[in-house]
Amino acid sequence: MTPELIEARKQFGSILTRSKRAARPDRCLWCGKKITRFCDSHTIPQMVLRNIAIDGKLDYANVILENPLLKADQGIAEADVFHLLCRECDNTLFQDYENPDNLKRLPTGRMLAQIALKDLFLIINKRLIEIQLFNQAKEHEQSFFITHKQEINLLDKRDFFSELDRVRNMLETEDYNFELITWDKVDYKVPVAFQEPLTVYGDMNGDLIVDIYDNTDRTSIKQMHMCVFPLDDCSVIVTFYNKADTEYDRFAEQLRNMDQEKRLKFLGYFMFFISEDMILAKKFPHRTYFYNQVRGMFMDQYDIWTETKEEFEWGKQRNLNRFKYWKADMFPAILTKKYAMKLE
Image (cartoon, rainbow, N blue to C red; front, side, top):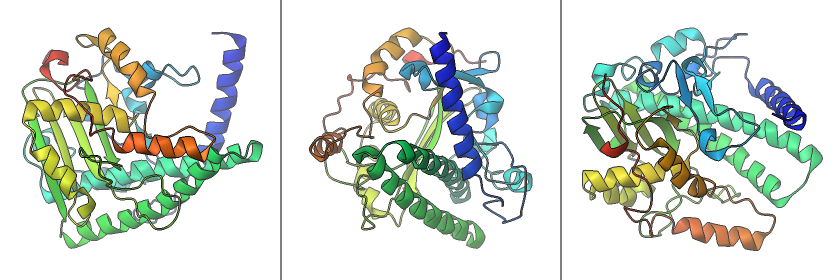
């Protein structure tokens, strides 16, 4: 590592630390109790991550992106952590779904609500940090991308807290309004773990679902949820959404109408295109081939990095049709048996 890179890492680490510190609330986001030390909450349950860890280590998206400022791997204890809850809430809110036996069965409405709740904590934590990061960036540079992105970050924050209230009401009233889209249980262990809410721009016909690029208050951000849970003797891939969010009805139908093999191929592509938050095993069949194939596409995601409105509009149209032109053989099928790890 060169002295210049070491210094750049130090500077980036300092900026990130300041942003995290400024973003952290002084009360538990669920019970409201004032606390000084937040729990290390894991988005993906540690009992899931242990199934793909090698000597306690896991790979992150940066093993593909190769950003020299970021780590490519971390230990289980550091994986996908957020800091918004007190220990009591973290220990009690997610008990139904953080159970490997329950994960092997069709999820209940309460389990889906618990997953959605944790997903929301994850993205709220990310947005609060991003807002602080972009505040610092705006002190040094005013550009179309930075201004537009920050406007969207602030609208996201509004919508995510609104969704948090909606899920809180479900859990308090036990009136669960989530609908399972797909539940695929396979008899092998996939080498990737994933749990995140996803805002989908366009469906498989190229029709708009949610305008993620709208920086006015006309659009309310709604999400579907996707989970990939590698377990000890199988894997479970789940998608679901709130039935009130009818924007996703057609996309849900498109997913259900696929046979399982085709759906798993699509969901593998879908996950890597929309997110950078998957966690991967450090060893699995065809790993080098997979990373080499994915690297080029993985650089080209939803965020449109441009300084002109014209290029931005072109990028929006390209992304709207992204799933319309998907073909089953265009992306390595990470969720199929070809890439499966050995069962214990």
